[in-house]
View 1: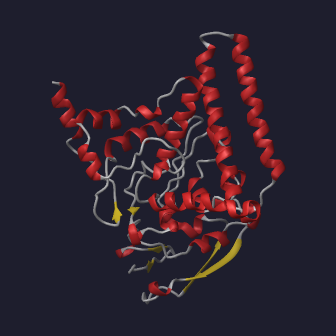
View 2: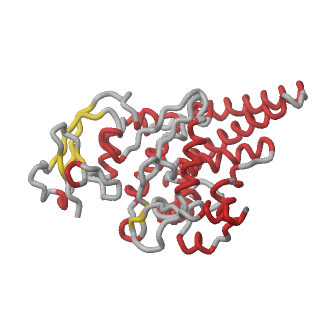
Amino acid sequence: MVAMTKRDDGEVVNGEEGKFEAGRPPPFRIGDIRVAIPSHCWVKNPWRSMSYVLRDAVVIAALAAAAGYLDSWIIWPIYWLAQGTMFWAVFVLGHDWYLHICLCPSTLGRRRWPWKLLQQRVAEQCGGALASLQHSGALPWMLPEKTYRGMKPNGRKMRFSLPYPLFAFPAYLVFVMWLDLVTYLHHHGYHEKLPWYRGKEWSYLRGGLTTIDRDYGWINNIHHDIGTHVIHHLFPQIPHYNLVEAVSLHSPMTSYCFPLPSHHRHCTDLASVICFQTKAAKPVLGKYYREPEKSGPLPLHLLGVLLRSLRVDHFVSDEGEVVYYQTDPRLYGDWQQKSK
């Protein structure tokens, strides 16, 4: 049972004395978010979609031609970094396309079921365990405590101080770096503890709300706004070029009301229907949406976020259906003693 309150400024919160508790069920349903998103954000434009494919293909070809023509050891590292980033951008397009095709029953008919099975299995983990595997077959970052305790001290140190899956071999491995880095940061590293769910506590909505949007500066446009991750998780049908508008406050103003779930109506100071004007999904999500830290031209601030997360986000308890990352205070102490 969730105790809901309403502050004088109209903001709905879910804890005692107006304190927000991220681990409690939200007072809205996924359908409430859906109707707040402008209808045109759901429309897929094949010509616009193909224009992004063409753009990326042209940039990749131009980078390869320029690097081959200049053929300098000063140029090659720049080429590897730029081309690996473009490989990542193409991957995002392929990922976006795959979701749209496989979520469209009129397109694939019976062939839709393998994706739905995969999505269900991934969703059962998202917000609960191994969520970073959703987009890649990378190292499982979400560690149960039993597995963590079974690791050798040197292995723990390597895992959280030297993230070897993020290193790469020229352009392809730069792509792998982006793949793992973005996947990890969309599920880890927020400055406040975020819940992970298991069993009956997990739902598609609650799992999606534990993801995090990130600002990548100039890279946002290059990798097709994949940083707008919360809405992408909840509604993968929305094409990448409409994600920013779907979550932001740049949409036309519309009036919106939704009924409060019956199990929240015991609160005498909160009406049974919440009404407000919304420009997109943010007002519906409220504090369940974590505003991303603004980036400079390059997302260098995310390196600090990554290092902090590797320092403090080590494992979750093997028990409980709402769990939070815990820190092993002995991790670095053990390493330092072994190295002496």
